[in-house]
Image 1 (tube, rainbow, N blue to C red):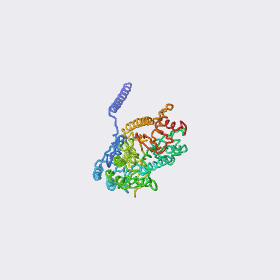
Image 2: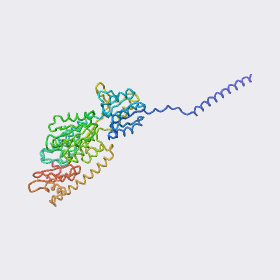
Image 3: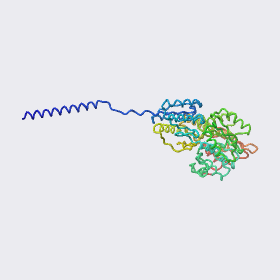
Image 4: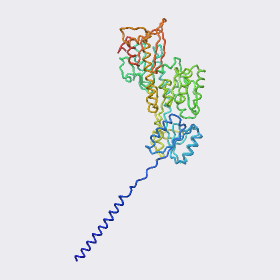
Length: 519
């Protein structure tokens, strides 16, 4: 009996050992196997079909997209049509074979874009229109800058210059010398002078007089004005006394909706302005600037002068600037462009060009990438609004624009690295020439009053040093952009105050007999 119990117990124990060994072996096999991972998601394939990669704005778009494509796991194909519509059609025909799911299209010729988009849609490729929306064509998305606002800001810059010119010349007998100069013929005009330098030059023209004190950050009792805002006060020196001003619009391609929108906004904003005469609107097929010199020469020959040039883009604006420089008209003509490309931005700093409207291509690139990737993956994207396009309502993101002059060109330094160096160099030249002008003015005065301070001597030089026997006064003026001019006026100057160099402010106030806090 005991033997049977022993044998049964032994068999049970042996069976337990075998089961344990089997479980242990399975555990070892599991630990030794490689972990199972899900395969990584393949990058989504999209394409950017641009009209011309040589444009500065498109270069910026490409830079932004290439920097961010890894973050959204996108494989981006770049197509450059080089302004050739036939080449663009050929490039787009090959996208289906590349398994591209979405394309950002900047059409060379919008009249041909409808057929191109139809082919892409039939191939299952989602289309996002960039900057130019083909009329009555179904696209999945539209990314563009605010074209109408571009035109309005350009027109506003001119109207603001007119307003400030009128304010500066009321009671004054000569052109204001430099950006930041306040000219008063009497104490009662101190408030309008301050109002002419309000903050927010691109947005606050109607309320400038009310906001000047708060915007300057300095009390009126100091006699000093702080110039802020986008519009450079020195533009008044470029507007002639004749009215109305002769204004020319340089429009881009007549078939390009961007050009049509900007020009229409220009005309609408200036309509009814008695001091503005739009003498000509020149069209430039394919945005080609080669005819600009001949066009502007024609206007000068026919009408005697050009006072203002508004251009639909930076390339057209700079072609106008080059012509005006060659003919010696650059000091008397206001020029405004759109796009803020590198050459135009440099010209703002150097004082050769007056204003640009920046369309912010960085935002255009980011929004276009987001739209294309979203459509390629899910068929949807996060748009901001809808735009009516004939029979269709198109999801869209509209990028805000901003007015740029030499005063706020620092906003473009991140885009154009060389701009910061140019600004530093220009600032140093201005300071050096301003100091040289003050010293020269001291030497010319010949007053040498030993009991007066150095600033008082400088101011006396400004008022008395250039007087002739006929009772005229010659003023030597150094502008903010480093240029020197002489202005001859009848009689003696009662008072000049400038918010430029601090020493110049003090000297002007002392020489005028006011001292600090006199205004």
